[in-house]
Length: 504
Image 1: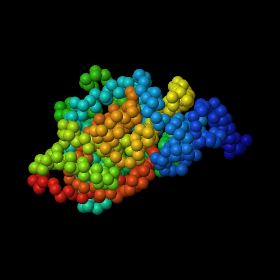
Image 2: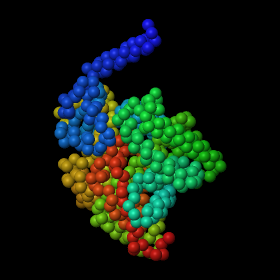
Image 3: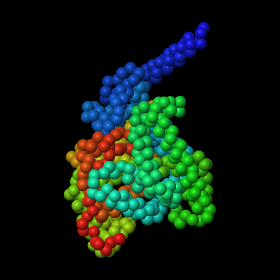
Image 4: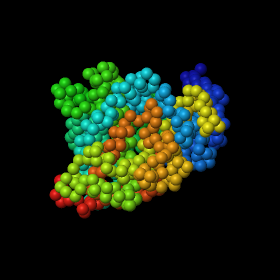
C-alpha cells in the first residue's frame, strides 16, 4: 500500500475512534431535571460560547430564560449554574474543600503551574498552610508603606495625563504589579527592571496576554502544547510563560541573597515558603516557583480591575465621589499633612469609602463565577433538583449579587446599601461573597481590600474623576477568570483645587 494511503487509513481510523469515544461520552453524560437550553448531539450547548468575546450577559440571558438555577452542556460535560445563597452554602460551606473543575485547573496551570489555585487534596492543604500566615492582619500591616508608596506612584502617573481622558488599564496593572512584587518578593520592581518605560511595556504586555487568555478559555486546544505555536494567542502564552518563570526565578534568587545578608527588613509573602519559615516545613523549588507566580499573577489583574471599575463608577456617580471626598477631608484635615500616608486606623473612620468598595465588588466581583466538581449527589433549590455526581456546579457570583430579592434595584450603583441601616447590612447569609466562601475562599481578600482602599483614598484626596466610559461600557465586560470591560476604563482626572498648598 502506498505511504499516502496508509497515512490516510490511519487518520480515518483515528477519527473513527474519536467519534466513537465522543458518542459514548455523550450517551453516558450526567443527567438532571434542572431546566436549560436544548442540546445538540455531541456538542451539547457549546455553540453558546463559540462567538467571541463571551460577555458577562451570556449567563444573565440564560438565567432570564430558565430561572435562578439552570444547566447547560459543553459536549458531555454538565454545568449547573447556582445563583441562590442557600445553594452556595450547601455546595461550598463544607468541612472538606470542594475541588475546582479540572478544566479550569488545566487552563490555570498553563500560566501559573501547580499553585494554590490549582492544587487539591493534601497538596492544597499544605500549600495553603504555607501561604496563609502571610495574609494575617498583623502581617498585612507591614505592607501599608508599600500600598501608600505605590498609590502615590499612580497619582504621579495620573498627573502626566494633564486633564485629558485616558484608559486606566495599563497604569493600574503597573501599580498592582509593582505592589505585588514588593510584597511577594520584598524588594521593588526597580531592582529587576530600573527602566520605568520598560515597566510600562511589561504592564501593557500583561494586559494584552490577559485578553488573549480570555479567548483561549473558550478555545482550549490553543493551550495544548502541540497546538500552541499554531495560533497567535498560543504563541503569546509561550512567551509570557518563559518570561514570568525567568523573572520569578531571578526574583527568588534575589530574595534568598537578601535573606542571607539580612537585608529584608519586612516579612514578604514569599518567605512563608522558604527554608526557615515558622511552620518548619520545606517546599520544593518547583512549589516555591509555582506559588510565587500564582501569588503575583492573581494579585495583579484582579485588584487592578476592581480599582478600574470603582474609579469609573465614581466618575459616573459624582454624588458618591463627593461624599467620599468630604469624608476624606474630615479625616485628613486641611493642614500640611493632608496628603500623609493612610493607616489602617483611618479606614475605621471611612464608612463611605468602605461602602463604595463593597458596592463595586457586588456589581463586578473579582471572579464572576467559580466552577467546582460535584463528587456526590447534591440536592439544590430546596430539594426540587439534584446536581448529580460527576457534574460541575458553577457558583455565579455576578448573578448571585444581582438577585432582586436580595438587593433591590440590583443593577443600580448604590453604596448606601452597605452604610448603617442600609438594606445590605442585614443581608441573608452567603448572598454577598465577593472573595468566595468556604475552605477555598480567596486567601488574599483582605490584602486586596487594604490595597484598594489605600489607592482610592490617595487618589480622591488629589483628584476629581470625570466619566469617559459609560455604564453600558462597563456592563459589556468579558466573562473570564477575572472581569474586564471591552473598552477599558476611560476617565479624566482633574486636580482638586482645595488641596492645602503646604502639603508635600
